[in-house]
Amino acid sequence: AQTVTQSQPEMSVQEAETVTLSCTYDTSESDYYLFWYKQPPSRQMILVIRQEAYKQQNATENRFSVNFQKAAKSFSLKISDSQLGDAAMYFCAYLYTGANSKLTFGKGITLSVRP
Amino acid sequence: DTEVTQTPKHLVMGMTNKKSLKCEQHMGHRAMYWYKQKAKKPPELMFVYSYEKLSINESVPSRFSPECPNSSLLNLHLHALQPEDSALYLCASSQEGQGRGTQYFGPGTRLTVL
Image (cartoon, rainbow over all chains, first blue to last red; front, side, top):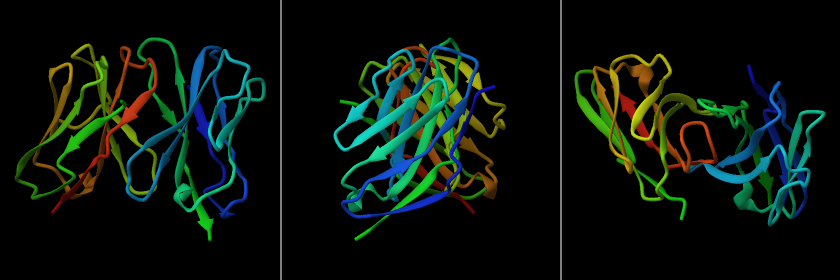
């Protein structure tokens, strides 16, 4: 079974600084997606970034980028120039591309941003 | 446009009430999902509809009854709930059939069972 591990329950970053959120996963599959979702206190789950396992290039969305290490099964999220609005719970998630697969979430990490 | 809408935003109900949650998407997505989320926990999958057919039921108690009237609409009918069913109920959709592609979430319905 696939598992996703986010070992740090909380992190804090100074506004305008850079922070990296860690995620590791375990799978025997070779074709899958990895995601980072953000859930602010308003509770809307928002997609931050997506990575296809077959792509070697790390995904980037504005201030958000990932470090995808397929062999190490590691998928970290880097947030540059942190803003107060980045404060939220962040979930790492895995999805196998085969039929009947289910999105597997990590436990999440709460990120606070200090002004 | 990746919008999934859910109504109501908040719902308070007694254990003997019957109520329904509604989810809608107009993106032409073929799979729709119900999740239950407790505070500071990841979402837990409840049901999946793929091409309007129920494809996954994660052993959810029968007091929760899903319905997919058409490809854009997903309902969750609630009856005789327990206080431990109080949670945020999230709906999601994905473009392809179940399990394939990115899931986009709605804002959720916060349910309180008294």
